[in-house]
Length: 160
Image (cartoon, rainbow, N blue to C red; front, side, top):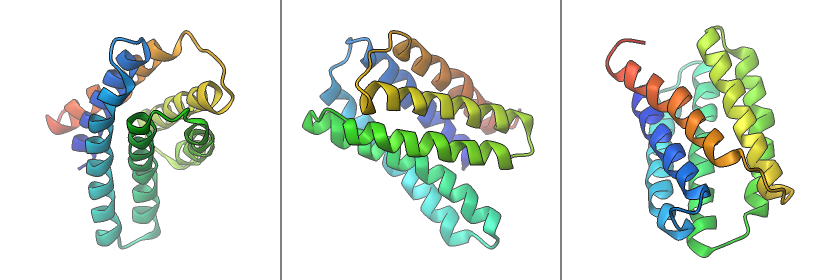
């Protein structure tokens, strides 16, 4: 299920990154964020239901960070909100992602969690603190492609 989640999270990050350039209106992005958020929610609720050990629940909690990110973002985009609250949520997620990086044993997962943490932190700076970050659109696309779409595709091809 991780491959499916990463594949679509990569897609939504890439599309959101393009949206940050102004090429796609925010409200047009909301349905895709909603769909990916619901997919991540479903996958991770299934993980919670199937969980047997604390590590299973911890992994599902990490996935739910993504689910709530895209669900919250869909609401911000749909209603044309400023996203200040979403930005502060991103700070919570950025800090939480450090715990997931610290608990991972696979160097690839450590790197991915650290990069995701940096992206969520940049969204905190941009939305929570209202700072303009010229690198944010391209950084979002790169993180989406390199840490989600590519790994998700490799996992689905059984080449990870």
